[in-house]
Length: 382
Image (cartoon, rainbow, N blue to C red; front, side, top):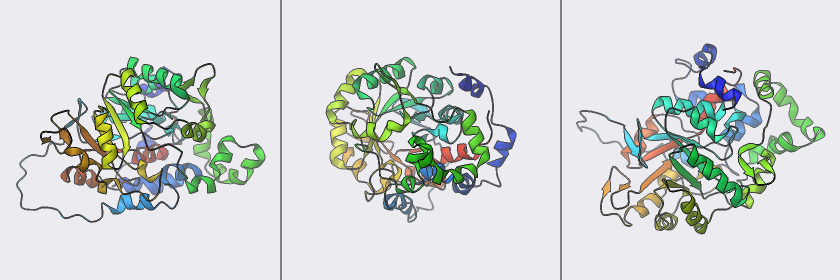
């Protein structure tokens, strides 16, 4: 375990950082957003907050929750949010979704997020594009941790990564299929993220003033060593993949159904396919023997103009296939299939999770709210 992970393992966030995100300052998840905007550079905030191209899908994800019709005068003697997802018991029906390089928001990044998820009784999904080793993240959580897979670095790197996840006793594998290329996120281009990450000094100069106006974040970032390579993507003969290679790596690592068969041979535990939006893809995933599908548009970050996840028909189209009856919303008794959907990129209220459950949309995963919380604690090392 790394030295930073050891410090985080036994340390709570400083009291000042905890008070910063406590009520009455933070009453809803949306309250975290303007606070995070103030605490981190614009490029870092927009990397987390933004979507692809014109952000139409990002807005649609939110709009889909703004018109619903509740039922009344129904006796509910007891509310029990406990559920089981791919054989894992959870205290409530949502998980912390994978977010690439959470370490950019806070040095603890994925380790802190996984620890918080475990303490809350739910699961954390670790992104391939993580700033911490998958072993440290698993060791830092008292709850289940799933591993999200990109086939970056080729099959050799992916095989080693999956084997490490198996040895570390990850509960499930999440295979993302909606990233044949990296999304065109206009905010990142305007903020000079490429220049700040990989450009020379002259290329960085136009964007440095914004970074320098956030000294607490900058000091924390520099003390943590700046941008490190990806410790979980180890290319045979080369070592960990540099963070600057992400876009090129995604363009050469698109997942096909044939890859899923190969992954299933390597991993004998539960497999979740993430990024399903159509009934055809849902059926293909079921045909390939996956345990669950994630109805997701990547938080509106990949392809603009696709439907809101809540309104996608993928889950409905998959229900009738090889399922004798439906249990607990979207669980199928014949082959124990689960369907899941991502909450919108700017998830604002916990009530949205309750609404999803009421609509029969199974379990939820949420990424941005957690990282906004990390951003609000960014000036304080554990």
